[in-house]
Length: 539
Image 1 (cartoon, rainbow, N blue to C red):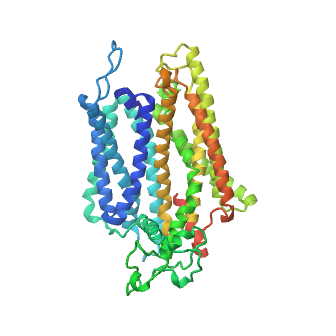
Image 2: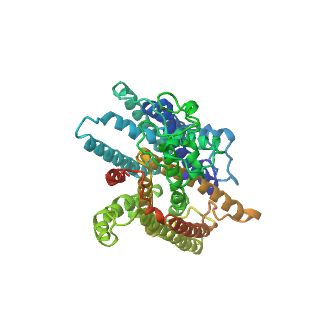
Image 3: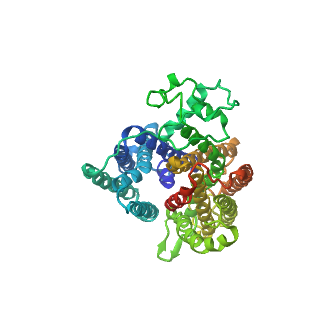
Protein backbone atom coordinates (compact mmCIF):
# COMPACT_ATOMS: atom_id res chain seq x y z
CA UNK A 1 0.00 0.00 0.00
CA UNK A 2 2.83 2.42 0.74
CA UNK A 3 4.18 1.82 -2.77
CA UNK A 4 0.75 2.61 -4.24
CA UNK A 5 0.40 5.82 -2.22
CA UNK A 6 3.90 7.14 -2.88
CA UNK A 7 3.74 6.26 -6.59
CA UNK A 8 0.24 7.33 -7.59
CA UNK A 9 -0.54 9.99 -4.96
CA UNK A 10 2.99 11.48 -5.04
CA UNK A 11 3.33 11.40 -1.25
CA UNK A 12 6.69 11.48 0.44
CA UNK A 13 7.70 8.41 2.44
CA UNK A 14 7.16 10.00 5.88
CA UNK A 15 3.60 11.33 5.28
CA UNK A 16 2.63 8.05 3.63
CA UNK A 17 3.95 6.11 6.62
CA UNK A 18 2.01 8.42 8.97
CA UNK A 19 -1.19 7.85 6.98
CA UNK A 20 -0.80 4.07 7.04
CA UNK A 21 0.06 4.14 10.74
CA UNK A 22 -3.15 6.04 11.46
CA UNK A 23 -5.08 3.61 9.26
CA UNK A 24 -3.70 0.64 11.20
CA UNK A 25 -4.48 2.38 14.48
CA UNK A 26 -8.05 3.10 13.38
CA UNK A 27 -8.61 -0.49 12.24
CA UNK A 28 -7.44 -1.91 15.56
CA UNK A 29 -9.13 0.75 17.67
CA UNK A 30 -12.49 0.22 15.98
CA UNK A 31 -12.33 -3.46 16.98
CA UNK A 32 -13.04 -2.32 20.55
CA UNK A 33 -15.99 -0.28 19.33
CA UNK A 34 -17.22 -3.23 17.26
CA UNK A 35 -17.07 -5.57 20.25
CA UNK A 36 -18.90 -3.06 22.45
CA UNK A 37 -21.67 -2.35 19.93
CA UNK A 38 -22.08 -6.05 19.19
CA UNK A 39 -22.31 -7.11 22.84
CA UNK A 40 -24.49 -4.20 23.96
CA UNK A 41 -26.81 -3.39 21.07
CA UNK A 42 -26.63 -5.10 17.67
CA UNK A 43 -25.69 -8.69 18.39
CA UNK A 44 -22.93 -10.56 16.58
CA UNK A 45 -24.75 -11.38 13.35
CA UNK A 46 -25.71 -7.78 12.59
CA UNK A 47 -22.25 -6.55 13.53
CA UNK A 48 -20.57 -9.01 11.15
CA UNK A 49 -23.09 -8.15 8.41
CA UNK A 50 -22.38 -4.43 8.76
CA UNK A 51 -18.65 -5.11 8.84
CA UNK A 52 -18.55 -7.24 5.69
CA UNK A 53 -20.69 -4.78 3.72
CA UNK A 54 -18.54 -1.85 4.89
CA UNK A 55 -15.38 -3.73 3.88
CA UNK A 56 -16.89 -4.46 0.47
CA UNK A 57 -17.73 -0.79 -0.13
CA UNK A 58 -14.29 0.33 1.08
CA UNK A 59 -12.45 -2.25 -1.06
CA UNK A 60 -14.54 -1.31 -4.10
CA UNK A 61 -13.84 2.39 -3.57
CA UNK A 62 -10.11 1.67 -3.34
CA UNK A 63 -10.36 -0.29 -6.60
CA UNK A 64 -12.18 2.63 -8.25
CA UNK A 65 -9.13 4.83 -7.57
CA UNK A 66 -7.16 2.60 -9.95
CA UNK A 67 -9.67 2.59 -12.83
CA UNK A 68 -11.11 6.13 -12.69
CA UNK A 69 -8.32 8.60 -13.55
CA UNK A 70 -10.01 11.58 -11.87
CA UNK A 71 -9.86 9.87 -8.48
CA UNK A 72 -6.07 10.16 -8.33
CA UNK A 73 -3.48 12.72 -9.45
CA UNK A 74 -2.11 12.72 -12.99
CA UNK A 75 1.10 10.74 -13.40
CA UNK A 76 4.40 12.60 -13.42
CA UNK A 77 5.47 13.35 -16.98
CA UNK A 78 8.92 12.58 -18.26
CA UNK A 79 9.72 16.26 -18.85
CA UNK A 80 7.94 17.70 -15.82
CA UNK A 81 9.99 19.40 -13.13
CA UNK A 82 7.39 18.51 -10.51
CA UNK A 83 4.40 16.24 -10.06
CA UNK A 84 0.81 17.37 -9.83
CA UNK A 85 -0.33 17.51 -6.23
CA UNK A 86 -3.19 15.49 -4.80
CA UNK A 87 -6.43 17.47 -4.50
CA UNK A 88 -8.52 17.46 -1.33
CA UNK A 89 -11.28 15.51 -3.11
CA UNK A 90 -8.88 12.81 -4.32
CA UNK A 91 -7.36 12.44 -0.88
CA UNK A 92 -10.86 12.34 0.65
CA UNK A 93 -11.81 9.39 -1.58
CA UNK A 94 -8.67 7.49 -0.56
CA UNK A 95 -9.17 8.20 3.14
CA UNK A 96 -12.86 7.31 2.87
CA UNK A 97 -11.97 3.90 1.41
CA UNK A 98 -9.50 3.36 4.26
CA UNK A 99 -12.14 4.39 6.81
CA UNK A 100 -14.78 1.98 5.43
CA UNK A 101 -12.27 -0.89 5.41
CA UNK A 102 -11.29 -0.04 9.00
CA UNK A 103 -14.94 0.06 10.07
CA UNK A 104 -15.48 -3.33 8.47
CA UNK A 105 -12.42 -4.80 10.17
CA UNK A 106 -13.51 -3.32 13.50
CA UNK A 107 -16.86 -5.10 13.35
CA UNK A 108 -15.74 -8.38 11.78
CA UNK A 109 -12.54 -9.18 13.71
CA UNK A 110 -13.94 -9.37 17.27
CA UNK A 111 -17.36 -10.75 16.32
CA UNK A 112 -16.81 -13.38 13.62
CA UNK A 113 -15.10 -15.93 15.87
CA UNK A 114 -17.82 -15.57 18.51
CA UNK A 115 -20.58 -15.84 15.89
CA UNK A 116 -19.07 -19.09 14.66
CA UNK A 117 -18.85 -20.40 18.22
CA UNK A 118 -22.57 -19.62 18.71
CA UNK A 119 -23.40 -22.02 15.87
CA UNK A 120 -21.48 -24.95 17.39
CA UNK A 121 -21.67 -24.55 21.17
CA UNK A 122 -23.99 -27.05 22.84
CA UNK A 123 -23.34 -27.54 26.55
CA UNK A 124 -25.52 -30.67 26.59
CA UNK A 125 -23.21 -32.35 24.09
CA UNK A 126 -20.57 -34.43 25.93
CA UNK A 127 -18.10 -33.65 23.12
CA UNK A 128 -18.79 -29.92 23.26
CA UNK A 129 -15.32 -29.01 24.55
CA UNK A 130 -13.62 -31.06 21.84
CA UNK A 131 -15.83 -29.54 19.14
CA UNK A 132 -15.14 -26.00 20.33
CA UNK A 133 -11.41 -26.65 20.61
CA UNK A 134 -11.39 -27.99 17.05
CA UNK A 135 -13.34 -24.96 15.84
CA UNK A 136 -10.94 -22.48 17.43
CA UNK A 137 -7.96 -24.33 15.96
CA UNK A 138 -9.46 -24.24 12.47
CA UNK A 139 -10.44 -20.59 12.86
CA UNK A 140 -6.91 -19.49 13.80
CA UNK A 141 -5.52 -21.72 11.05
CA UNK A 142 -7.77 -19.98 8.51
CA UNK A 143 -6.55 -16.59 9.74
CA UNK A 144 -2.97 -17.75 9.25
CA UNK A 145 -3.74 -19.02 5.75
CA UNK A 146 -5.40 -15.71 4.83
CA UNK A 147 -2.32 -13.78 6.00
CA UNK A 148 -0.06 -16.02 3.94
CA UNK A 149 -2.24 -15.64 0.82
CA UNK A 150 -2.48 -11.88 1.30
CA UNK A 151 1.29 -11.52 1.72
CA UNK A 152 2.20 -13.76 -1.22
CA UNK A 153 -0.50 -14.34 -3.85
CA UNK A 154 -2.20 -10.93 -3.66
CA UNK A 155 1.12 -9.07 -3.48
CA UNK A 156 2.41 -11.10 -6.44
CA UNK A 157 -0.69 -10.17 -8.47
CA UNK A 158 -0.25 -6.49 -7.62
CA UNK A 159 3.43 -6.64 -8.46
CA UNK A 160 3.08 -8.43 -11.82
CA UNK A 161 -0.41 -7.57 -13.12
CA UNK A 162 -0.84 -4.01 -11.84
CA UNK A 163 -3.02 -2.30 -9.28
CA UNK A 164 -6.30 -2.60 -11.17
CA UNK A 165 -6.12 -6.39 -11.01
CA UNK A 166 -4.35 -6.33 -7.64
CA UNK A 167 -7.15 -4.38 -5.96
CA UNK A 168 -9.88 -5.97 -8.09
CA UNK A 169 -9.19 -9.50 -6.80
CA UNK A 170 -9.78 -8.57 -3.10
CA UNK A 171 -12.92 -6.73 -4.24
CA UNK A 172 -14.26 -9.88 -5.92
CA UNK A 173 -13.38 -11.93 -2.86
CA UNK A 174 -15.37 -9.51 -0.69
CA UNK A 175 -18.37 -9.83 -3.05
CA UNK A 176 -18.16 -13.60 -2.61
CA UNK A 177 -17.76 -13.25 1.16
CA UNK A 178 -20.79 -10.96 1.58
CA UNK A 179 -22.95 -13.09 -0.74
CA UNK A 180 -22.22 -16.37 1.03
CA UNK A 181 -22.65 -14.82 4.46
CA UNK A 182 -26.03 -13.21 3.72
CA UNK A 183 -27.42 -16.18 1.77
CA UNK A 184 -26.87 -18.38 4.83
CA UNK A 185 -28.53 -15.82 7.11
CA UNK A 186 -31.77 -17.77 7.82
CA UNK A 187 -29.77 -20.74 9.12
CA UNK A 188 -27.68 -18.87 11.70
CA UNK A 189 -28.19 -19.00 15.45
CA UNK A 190 -28.36 -15.29 16.34
CA UNK A 191 -27.62 -14.67 20.00
CA UNK A 192 -29.09 -11.50 21.47
CA UNK A 193 -26.94 -8.69 22.85
CA UNK A 194 -26.42 -9.13 26.61
CA UNK A 195 -24.25 -6.18 27.55
CA UNK A 196 -20.54 -5.52 27.37
CA UNK A 197 -17.72 -5.77 29.88
CA UNK A 198 -16.64 -2.27 28.84
CA UNK A 199 -19.94 -0.97 30.22
CA UNK A 200 -19.22 -2.56 33.59
CA UNK A 201 -15.76 -0.98 33.77
CA UNK A 202 -17.21 2.41 32.91
CA UNK A 203 -19.88 2.05 35.61
CA UNK A 204 -17.26 1.25 38.26
CA UNK A 205 -15.36 4.44 37.43
CA UNK A 206 -18.56 6.52 37.50
CA UNK A 207 -19.81 5.00 40.77
CA UNK A 208 -16.43 5.44 42.49
CA UNK A 209 -16.34 9.09 41.42
CA UNK A 210 -19.89 9.73 42.62
CA UNK A 211 -19.04 8.28 46.03
CA UNK A 212 -15.65 9.98 46.30
CA UNK A 213 -16.64 11.51 49.64
CA UNK A 214 -16.70 8.06 51.32
CA UNK A 215 -13.68 7.37 53.51
CA UNK A 216 -12.33 4.02 52.31
CA UNK A 217 -9.84 3.90 55.18
CA UNK A 218 -12.65 2.84 57.50
CA UNK A 219 -13.00 -0.89 58.08
CA UNK A 220 -16.22 -1.91 56.39
CA UNK A 221 -17.54 -5.42 56.98
CA UNK A 222 -18.50 -7.69 54.07
CA UNK A 223 -22.19 -6.91 54.48
CA UNK A 224 -21.53 -3.28 53.45
CA UNK A 225 -20.32 -4.36 50.02
CA UNK A 226 -22.82 -5.17 47.30
CA UNK A 227 -22.58 -8.68 45.92
CA UNK A 228 -24.73 -9.61 42.92
CA UNK A 229 -27.02 -12.63 43.52
CA UNK A 230 -25.25 -14.69 40.84
CA UNK A 231 -21.74 -13.58 41.81
CA UNK A 232 -19.18 -16.10 43.17
CA UNK A 233 -16.65 -13.47 44.24
CA UNK A 234 -17.31 -12.21 47.76
CA UNK A 235 -14.09 -10.47 48.88
CA UNK A 236 -12.29 -7.36 47.74
CA UNK A 237 -8.52 -7.21 47.19
CA UNK A 238 -6.39 -4.74 49.11
CA UNK A 239 -5.03 -2.66 46.21
CA UNK A 240 -6.79 0.23 44.45
CA UNK A 241 -8.98 0.76 47.53
CA UNK A 242 -10.40 3.97 46.08
CA UNK A 243 -12.47 1.80 43.73
CA UNK A 244 -14.07 0.02 46.69
CA UNK A 245 -16.39 3.01 47.02
CA UNK A 246 -18.26 1.80 43.94
CA UNK A 247 -19.65 -1.27 45.75
CA UNK A 248 -20.27 0.23 49.23
CA UNK A 249 -23.97 0.21 50.13
CA UNK A 250 -24.89 3.48 51.86
CA UNK A 251 -28.68 3.13 51.96
CA UNK A 252 -30.03 -0.32 51.04
CA UNK A 253 -33.61 0.99 50.82
CA UNK A 254 -32.65 3.41 48.04
CA UNK A 255 -29.80 1.59 46.29
CA UNK A 256 -31.30 -1.92 46.19
CA UNK A 257 -34.45 -3.27 44.55
CA UNK A 258 -36.69 -5.78 46.36
CA UNK A 259 -35.05 -8.62 44.39
CA UNK A 260 -31.61 -7.60 45.70
CA UNK A 261 -30.33 -6.02 42.48
CA UNK A 262 -28.88 -2.52 42.22
CA UNK A 263 -31.38 0.25 41.49
CA UNK A 264 -28.84 2.32 39.54
CA UNK A 265 -25.84 0.37 38.11
CA UNK A 266 -23.92 3.64 37.75
CA UNK A 267 -24.21 4.32 41.49
CA UNK A 268 -23.73 0.84 42.92
CA UNK A 269 -21.58 -1.91 41.38
CA UNK A 270 -21.01 -5.44 42.60
CA UNK A 271 -17.74 -6.72 44.06
CA UNK A 272 -17.02 -8.73 40.91
CA UNK A 273 -17.22 -5.62 38.71
CA UNK A 274 -14.86 -3.73 41.00
CA UNK A 275 -12.36 -6.58 40.95
CA UNK A 276 -12.60 -6.72 37.17
CA UNK A 277 -11.66 -3.04 37.05
CA UNK A 278 -8.75 -3.68 39.43
CA UNK A 279 -7.52 -6.55 37.26
CA UNK A 280 -7.58 -4.24 34.25
CA UNK A 281 -5.50 -1.62 36.09
CA UNK A 282 -3.02 -4.26 37.31
CA UNK A 283 -2.07 -5.35 33.79
CA UNK A 284 -1.65 -1.85 32.35
CA UNK A 285 2.02 -1.32 33.37
CA UNK A 286 3.18 -4.68 32.01
CA UNK A 287 1.00 -4.31 28.91
CA UNK A 288 2.51 -0.90 28.17
CA UNK A 289 6.02 -2.40 27.98
CA UNK A 290 5.05 -4.17 24.74
CA UNK A 291 4.10 -1.00 22.86
CA UNK A 292 7.63 -0.14 21.71
CA UNK A 293 8.10 -3.59 20.16
CA UNK A 294 4.80 -3.21 18.31
CA UNK A 295 5.97 0.20 17.05
CA UNK A 296 9.16 -1.42 15.73
CA UNK A 297 7.23 -4.20 14.02
CA UNK A 298 4.91 -1.70 12.35
CA UNK A 299 7.52 0.36 10.49
CA UNK A 300 6.90 0.72 6.73
CA UNK A 301 10.34 1.92 5.59
CA UNK A 302 11.76 -1.55 5.03
CA UNK A 303 9.81 -1.68 1.77
CA UNK A 304 11.93 1.17 0.35
CA UNK A 305 15.12 -0.69 1.25
CA UNK A 306 13.86 -3.87 -0.42
CA UNK A 307 12.99 -1.96 -3.61
CA UNK A 308 16.68 -1.03 -4.02
CA UNK A 309 18.07 -4.53 -3.36
CA UNK A 310 18.35 -7.68 -5.45
CA UNK A 311 15.36 -9.84 -4.48
CA UNK A 312 16.05 -12.75 -6.83
CA UNK A 313 16.15 -16.19 -5.25
CA UNK A 314 16.59 -17.86 -8.62
CA UNK A 315 17.47 -16.14 -11.90
CA UNK A 316 13.85 -16.42 -13.07
CA UNK A 317 12.11 -15.73 -9.75
CA UNK A 318 12.08 -12.47 -7.79
CA UNK A 319 10.36 -12.17 -4.39
CA UNK A 320 7.95 -9.19 -4.32
CA UNK A 321 9.06 -6.57 -1.81
CA UNK A 322 5.74 -6.75 0.00
CA UNK A 323 6.11 -10.49 0.60
CA UNK A 324 9.30 -10.31 2.66
CA UNK A 325 7.19 -9.91 5.80
CA UNK A 326 6.40 -13.60 5.43
CA UNK A 327 9.84 -14.31 6.89
CA UNK A 328 8.68 -12.82 10.18
CA UNK A 329 5.50 -14.92 10.13
CA UNK A 330 7.38 -18.11 9.23
CA UNK A 331 9.86 -17.68 12.07
CA UNK A 332 7.19 -16.56 14.54
CA UNK A 333 4.49 -19.13 13.91
CA UNK A 334 6.25 -22.10 12.36
CA UNK A 335 9.91 -22.50 13.18
CA UNK A 336 10.20 -20.81 16.57
CA UNK A 337 6.90 -21.80 18.21
CA UNK A 338 7.25 -25.40 17.01
CA UNK A 339 10.89 -25.50 18.12
CA UNK A 340 10.11 -23.88 21.46
CA UNK A 341 7.15 -26.13 22.28
CA UNK A 342 8.71 -29.43 21.23
CA UNK A 343 12.41 -28.96 21.96
CA UNK A 344 13.05 -26.16 24.44
CA UNK A 345 10.03 -26.53 26.76
CA UNK A 346 10.88 -30.09 27.96
CA UNK A 347 14.51 -29.07 28.47
CA UNK A 348 13.80 -25.78 30.23
CA UNK A 349 11.08 -27.30 32.43
CA UNK A 350 13.69 -29.43 34.19
CA UNK A 351 15.59 -26.35 35.32
CA UNK A 352 12.90 -23.71 35.80
CA UNK A 353 10.06 -25.86 37.16
CA UNK A 354 7.67 -24.03 34.82
CA UNK A 355 5.34 -26.27 32.75
CA UNK A 356 5.81 -23.85 29.83
CA UNK A 357 9.61 -23.79 30.14
CA UNK A 358 9.85 -20.07 30.83
CA UNK A 359 7.39 -17.89 32.67
CA UNK A 360 5.29 -15.44 30.61
CA UNK A 361 7.23 -12.47 31.99
CA UNK A 362 10.59 -14.09 31.14
CA UNK A 363 9.45 -14.68 27.56
CA UNK A 364 8.26 -11.09 27.30
CA UNK A 365 11.66 -9.83 28.47
CA UNK A 366 13.60 -12.03 26.05
CA UNK A 367 11.31 -10.85 23.27
CA UNK A 368 12.09 -7.22 24.11
CA UNK A 369 15.85 -7.93 24.08
CA UNK A 370 15.60 -9.59 20.67
CA UNK A 371 13.57 -6.62 19.46
CA UNK A 372 16.42 -4.30 20.47
CA UNK A 373 18.94 -6.51 18.66
CA UNK A 374 16.76 -6.66 15.54
CA UNK A 375 16.46 -2.86 15.41
CA UNK A 376 20.22 -2.43 15.90
CA UNK A 377 20.83 -4.95 13.13
CA UNK A 378 18.42 -2.97 10.92
CA UNK A 379 20.50 0.17 11.49
CA UNK A 380 23.78 -1.61 10.68
CA UNK A 381 22.36 -3.20 7.52
CA UNK A 382 20.94 0.13 6.31
CA UNK A 383 24.32 1.83 6.85
CA UNK A 384 25.96 -0.81 4.67
CA UNK A 385 23.24 -0.52 2.00
CA UNK A 386 23.40 3.28 1.92
CA UNK A 387 27.20 3.33 1.64
CA UNK A 388 27.03 0.86 -1.25
CA UNK A 389 24.44 3.03 -3.01
CA UNK A 390 26.56 6.18 -2.67
CA UNK A 391 29.75 4.37 -3.78
CA UNK A 392 27.89 3.10 -6.85
CA UNK A 393 26.83 6.65 -7.76
CA UNK A 394 23.14 6.18 -6.93
CA UNK A 395 22.81 8.97 -4.36
CA UNK A 396 20.22 10.76 -6.51
CA UNK A 397 18.62 7.62 -7.93
CA UNK A 398 16.57 5.91 -5.18
CA UNK A 399 15.05 3.44 -7.67
CA UNK A 400 18.38 1.99 -8.76
CA UNK A 401 18.87 -1.65 -7.77
CA UNK A 402 22.15 -2.36 -6.01
CA UNK A 403 24.37 -5.36 -6.36
CA UNK A 404 23.33 -6.32 -2.83
CA UNK A 405 21.08 -9.23 -2.02
CA UNK A 406 17.87 -8.64 -0.08
CA UNK A 407 18.87 -11.71 1.95
CA UNK A 408 20.88 -9.26 4.08
CA UNK A 409 17.55 -8.36 5.69
CA UNK A 410 16.60 -11.96 6.54
CA UNK A 411 18.40 -12.01 9.95
CA UNK A 412 16.53 -8.92 11.21
CA UNK A 413 13.18 -10.25 9.92
CA UNK A 414 13.93 -13.55 11.68
CA UNK A 415 14.78 -11.81 14.96
CA UNK A 416 11.57 -9.78 14.73
CA UNK A 417 9.62 -13.00 14.23
CA UNK A 418 11.10 -14.69 17.29
CA UNK A 419 10.72 -11.49 19.35
CA UNK A 420 7.06 -11.24 18.38
CA UNK A 421 6.38 -14.91 19.14
CA UNK A 422 7.96 -14.67 22.60
CA UNK A 423 6.67 -11.28 23.64
CA UNK A 424 3.14 -11.30 22.25
CA UNK A 425 2.24 -14.86 23.29
CA UNK A 426 3.86 -14.25 26.68
CA UNK A 427 1.87 -11.04 27.07
CA UNK A 428 -1.45 -12.71 26.25
CA UNK A 429 -0.72 -15.56 28.67
CA UNK A 430 0.27 -13.07 31.39
CA UNK A 431 -2.99 -11.15 30.93
CA UNK A 432 -5.08 -14.32 30.88
CA UNK A 433 -3.57 -15.56 34.12
CA UNK A 434 -4.17 -12.25 35.87
CA UNK A 435 -7.74 -11.68 34.72
CA UNK A 436 -10.73 -13.41 36.28
CA UNK A 437 -12.61 -15.88 34.12
CA UNK A 438 -15.34 -13.36 33.32
CA UNK A 439 -12.72 -11.16 31.59
CA UNK A 440 -11.08 -13.84 29.44
CA UNK A 441 -12.21 -12.25 26.16
CA UNK A 442 -10.83 -8.91 27.33
CA UNK A 443 -7.24 -10.16 27.01
CA UNK A 444 -7.40 -10.23 23.21
CA UNK A 445 -9.16 -6.85 23.24
CA UNK A 446 -6.43 -5.19 25.29
CA UNK A 447 -3.80 -6.53 22.87
CA UNK A 448 -5.80 -4.98 20.02
CA UNK A 449 -5.78 -1.66 21.89
CA UNK A 450 -1.99 -2.01 22.07
CA UNK A 451 -1.81 -2.33 18.28
CA UNK A 452 -3.97 0.79 17.92
CA UNK A 453 -1.84 2.85 20.32
CA UNK A 454 1.36 1.56 18.69
CA UNK A 455 0.06 2.83 15.35
CA UNK A 456 -0.53 6.27 16.86
CA UNK A 457 2.91 6.33 18.50
CA UNK A 458 4.55 5.29 15.23
CA UNK A 459 2.77 8.04 13.27
CA UNK A 460 3.66 10.65 15.90
CA UNK A 461 7.30 9.54 16.02
CA UNK A 462 7.66 9.63 12.24
CA UNK A 463 6.06 13.09 12.07
CA UNK A 464 8.36 14.50 14.78
CA UNK A 465 11.55 13.02 13.28
CA UNK A 466 10.62 14.13 9.76
CA UNK A 467 9.74 17.64 10.94
CA UNK A 468 12.91 18.15 13.01
CA UNK A 469 15.40 16.65 10.56
CA UNK A 470 13.97 18.47 7.52
CA UNK A 471 13.99 21.89 9.23
CA UNK A 472 16.03 24.60 7.54
CA UNK A 473 15.86 22.94 4.14
CA UNK A 474 17.88 19.90 5.20
CA UNK A 475 17.21 16.46 3.79
CA UNK A 476 14.95 14.52 6.13
CA UNK A 477 16.19 11.31 7.67
CA UNK A 478 13.00 9.78 6.30
CA UNK A 479 13.22 11.17 2.79
CA UNK A 480 11.65 9.19 -0.05
CA UNK A 481 15.17 9.13 -1.50
CA UNK A 482 16.58 6.83 1.15
CA UNK A 483 20.05 7.16 -0.41
CA UNK A 484 20.09 10.84 0.58
CA UNK A 485 18.17 10.39 3.80
CA UNK A 486 19.43 8.68 6.93
CA UNK A 487 17.11 5.80 7.65
CA UNK A 488 19.96 4.25 9.62
CA UNK A 489 19.90 7.18 12.08
CA UNK A 490 16.16 6.67 12.54
CA UNK A 491 16.77 2.98 13.28
CA UNK A 492 19.43 3.88 15.85
CA UNK A 493 16.91 6.22 17.50
CA UNK A 494 14.40 3.37 17.58
CA UNK A 495 17.08 1.11 19.10
CA UNK A 496 17.73 3.67 21.84
CA UNK A 497 14.01 3.95 22.61
CA UNK A 498 13.74 0.14 22.66
CA UNK A 499 16.56 -0.08 25.22
CA UNK A 500 14.85 2.56 27.38
CA UNK A 501 11.64 0.55 27.10
CA UNK A 502 13.45 -2.60 28.27
CA UNK A 503 14.74 -0.75 31.33
CA UNK A 504 11.16 0.35 32.00
CA UNK A 505 10.13 -3.31 31.69
CA UNK A 506 12.67 -4.25 34.39
CA UNK A 507 11.22 -1.59 36.71
CA UNK A 508 7.70 -2.93 36.15
CA UNK A 509 8.90 -6.48 36.85
CA UNK A 510 10.50 -5.29 40.08
CA UNK A 511 7.23 -3.74 41.19
CA UNK A 512 5.27 -6.88 40.27
CA UNK A 513 7.51 -9.45 41.95
CA UNK A 514 5.03 -10.00 44.77
CA UNK A 515 2.39 -11.07 42.24
CA UNK A 516 4.22 -14.36 41.48
CA UNK A 517 4.47 -13.78 37.74
CA UNK A 518 0.93 -12.53 37.48
CA UNK A 519 -0.89 -15.50 38.97
CA UNK A 520 -4.40 -14.36 39.80
CA UNK A 521 -6.13 -15.26 43.01
CA UNK A 522 -9.50 -14.49 41.50
CA UNK A 523 -9.84 -17.80 39.70
CA UNK A 524 -10.73 -20.94 41.63
CA UNK A 525 -7.51 -22.90 42.01
CA UNK A 526 -9.05 -26.08 40.66
CA UNK A 527 -10.03 -24.40 37.38
CA UNK A 528 -7.04 -22.14 36.88
CA UNK A 529 -4.55 -24.45 35.19
CA UNK A 530 -7.12 -26.00 32.84
CA UNK A 531 -8.47 -22.55 31.91
CA UNK A 532 -5.01 -21.12 31.22
CA UNK A 533 -3.96 -24.05 29.05
CA UNK A 534 -7.14 -23.94 26.97
CA UNK A 535 -6.94 -20.22 26.30
CA UNK A 536 -3.20 -20.19 25.71
CA UNK A 537 -3.67 -22.95 23.13
CA UNK A 538 -6.08 -20.70 21.28
CA UNK A 539 -3.75 -17.71 21.59
